[in-house]
Image (cartoon, rainbow, N blue to C red):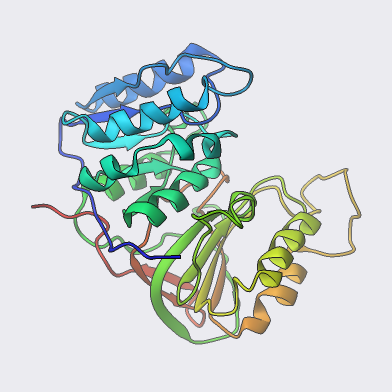
Amino acid sequence: MTQQAKLKGKPLPQGGTVGVPAPAFAFHNRSEILRGVEWWDQRGYKVKLAEGIYERKGYVAGDPKTRANGITAMFADPEVDLVMCSDAGFGSAHTIPYIDFDVIRDNPKPFVGYSDITSLHTSIRHYTGLVTFVGPLLCDIAHKETKPFTQERFLRAVTSDEPLGDMPRNPEDGYIRCFNSGSVTGEIVGGCLWLLTQNIGTPWQIDLDGKVFFFEDVDSPPWYIDGHLTQMKHAGMLENVVGVVISEMARCDWKQGRADGWPGLTSLEDVFEEHLEPLGVPIVYGFPLGHGDYLATTPLGVEVTVDADKGSLTFNEPALQRD
């Protein structure tokens, strides 16, 4: 897999324009999109919705070409300063064969989304080298359950050309489980574990060699996570990982009210101890980096330091740059 040179977009300027494609799920209630538009408007920004944003085809927002064209158009549009996906869920991978990655490479901008958007993070990185952001979606940003923590971290991440520094812990549960000891510095890459394994065998399969491997997931019991990590191990993908960052893994452990499996046999920590601890690299588990109540927007493709003695994750490199 050929690694593209690192590419960075510019910080979102005050009063700038947010472009919104719909690469995955269709909207359910139109107010989900309208809430997000109003949230940006109240802060002095403008929003440009991609053509086809309100289309529906089954559970996705129109046919793959329409969704892909929306992504390409937001990067090509000189008025757009930041590209924020409308929603996730499922379907982003459909669009990859139809995206014009040359346009993205020639017009680097902050690109934000999480969960199913992982397929776009990995493919954009593969074809362009662009630093992208695991962060909220338009349909999330003004949801009644979205915390100010999530909104504030997001705005800081996409408007600054300074390193983000130390990753904050969950305000309601600051415990971080660490495996092994020591610290390591390297580029952080990753996303939703389910999507990372779906992309195995594609040209944009994630390259973890010499990298800090970040992953998160939701509603995946320990045997699912075991299966994903087993597949990665069998594919040789974990052999040269230098560090691991695991999110809080929302609603994944059997103790969290699950009624669909074998309670008490194996926990998530058991799975991590079996598959990841033997790698001998620093591992931190429990930061708010996914589907939990708090989401700390995280750039992918920048240099970080993982310290398993301090239980810390530090962003050393700016994710965005000005001219």
